[in-house]
Amino acid sequence: MRPKFDTPITRLFGIEYPIIQGAMAWLSEAKLAAAVSNAGGLGVMGAAIMSVEEFEVHVKEAKSLTDRPLAVNFPLVLGEYEKHLEMVLSHGIRIIFVSAGSPKLLTPRIKQAGAICVHVVPNLKLAKKVAEAGVDALVLESYEAGGHVAQEGITALVNIPNVARQVTLPLIAAGGVVDGRGLAAALALGAHAVQMGTRFLATRECNAHLNYKRLLLKAEEGEAVVYGHRWHPGRALRSPAVERILAIEAENQAVDAVRKFIGRGRARKAAHDGNLEEGMFYAGAGAGLINDEPTVAELFDQMLSEYAEVVQQLGRSI
Amino acid sequence: MRPKFDTPITRLFGIEYPIIQGAMAWLSEAKLAAAVSNAGGLGVMGAAIMSVEEFEVHVKEAKSLTDRPLAVNFPLVLGEYEKHLEMVLSHGIRIIFVSAGSPKLLTPRIKQAGAICVHVVPNLKLAKKVAEAGVDALVLESYEAGGHVAQEGITALVNIPNVARQVTLPLIAAGGVVDGRGLAAALALGAHAVQMGTRFLATRECNAHLNYKRLLLKAEEGEAVVYGHRWHPGRALRSPAVERILAIEAENQAVDAVRKFIGRGRARKAAHDGNLEEGMFYAGAGAGLINDEPTVAELFDQMLSEYAEVVQQLGRSI
Image 1 (cartoon, rainbow over the protein chains, first blue to last red):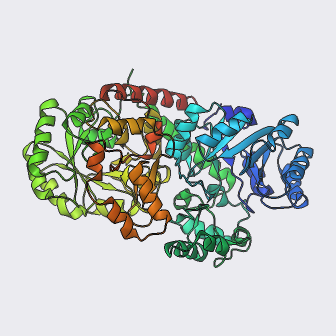
Image 2 (cartoon, rainbow over the protein chains, first blue to last red):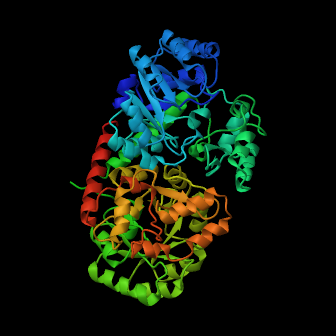
Image 3 (cartoon, helix red, strand yellow):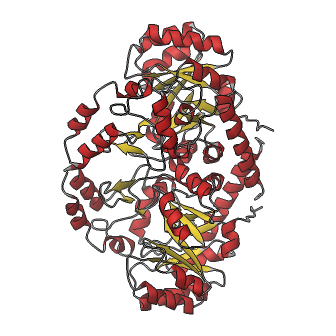
């Protein structure tokens, strides 16, 4: 018996379960996104720094794999996002996630096209800012998230209720959720859905290199570490590249030394090449809780039944 | 209509609600602890660096204020903890919390006296270690906690389920919980109770200086910051002392410069003197969510009714 949800997010997106797959650079392609949508959640394809033509291949493929709602994510700091937007709209994508940029850039055009605009923010301050710009929903990415994290390091347990109290928009909690317990906790804290990246990385449908998945599956607590506390923090699995960054920081070298060392292309070297020496294996703080590689459908089964069990147990107290 | 709880922690301690008041140096004295126990939770008096004679005054006073279970906390790094232990046992205290030290030091004597031994740990690794030493229950203090925090920075959302899965001891989650939503989330994640410090600091019964309470009540998100990432991290409200520490760190000065600057006595200067210039105002990451100073009984009312509402809402999905 599966739980039935009716939240501002399931209603807004027209989906069955409040489970969104987070965009991950080079790792959230057609097959994964379509599988998540087919399972009753929302698949999100990440444009990363693909060209419009490259990304269009993925969009077309995903559309051919599912009739359910699908979304895309554009990081505004990269690429020709306006052309990307027109392309995805032309293929009938109606849910657009925008991260790392001003909400004023794309919101008007998305709304004008009758599509749904979702913005990714790390805290209440920016949640209020994007709410003013007229977005339809928020992804609140807390300190537990993989990849870039906000410098203040606000964790989900306090971030979610703080935004839920003060911003009335539909709210998706991202960072640290990997199972049914996390889903129940996020909803209890006031979120209307969760977004998971790292948990979907370890599914059969994700295109991540085998080395990436192995590194993730054997990670224990605390092994998805935060580096770059003093400039542009990120969270990734311990690897030679991350150890080098931590060493540079411990040596008190200038911020530029870290920036120069990271350079460009390390995410792709991890995702596609499984380059253990040079790659940056971004992952969320929940990495230590992930020990299997199910299909997306199996993952939904596990999560939803654990969620139902936990909620039933809580219900005995009232 | 109040929720009714039956968890491994409420059973172990013989209390009505799974709400424990955390020991705070100079701030968890008789009146606060007794009020929490009288409200149906568990009050915990912190010995900090008081002498046996000083602490005995508080123990006697608390015992005179409640007939319900009461506990004490000893940080093993400070003071003559063996004499403290014999003193509290002689006054009929039957629940002993031990923090910051080896579980081998006090557990045998506590068990021999027929009392309950609870150990404070920051992560799974140490949870397993104290479980082996035979303690009766755990406080799992995540990155959100005020005061000293563990260097790995493991947050509640991943820390609680990780320990709950792998250690079978009764589990108390500490750090970041300030309301009924947080209580529901912690229990959903697998905890059997929550421990709150900062939330109880802002109650009428807490002896904190008015300046401390004012600073806490006006704190917004991210203002209970972590300093000392590279040596012995702590979390406190932004104040001149904390700003100076952050500046020393930003200047890449050696770890010793921070240690020397902090020195001794800053917690007491904050707690009792309200010294805004020199005091260190330790507080958890939930500080930004605290905006009122209720009585302890009022706080229990608020939390429990919010908890019941949240659980009822979750229940509609199953």
